[in-house]
Length: 150
Image (cartoon, rainbow, N blue to C red; front, side, top):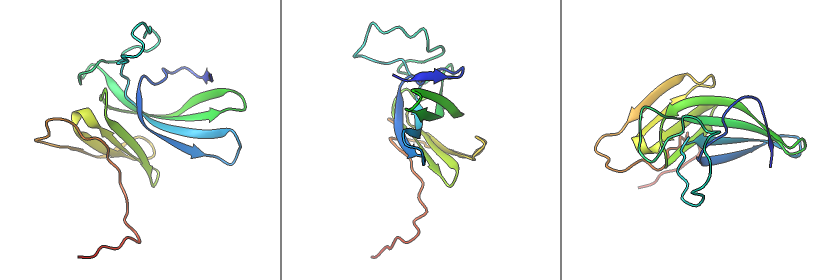
């Protein structure tokens, strides 16, 4: 168990966890899509009192998900939130990716995806139409040095 450093609500459900090493052993970053969802069938007696404004299984404007970037220090046994971007609520199915210092996100249950700059400012967002379920993941690649043939 790690000790939380700072005043923030830890994630309630997450998808798309990315490990980013540093030059210091035992110190690394974790990037996640914080679903902010209290759905957990395996621990029905768990108390969600430390997770205010967390949502259930349906999408709602009453809740929000977030991009979280943690700095984890196993040497001191601690973790801290170093970056947060508020995102549309998605209780399940979602993703985040850092690409050229921008953050690409997928709020899957709302069938929406977006890109934010390094300061968390929205660059562009997209919503799909005609999808009756969800978008599972969204990633952005530059395709440099990729070859295509017919």
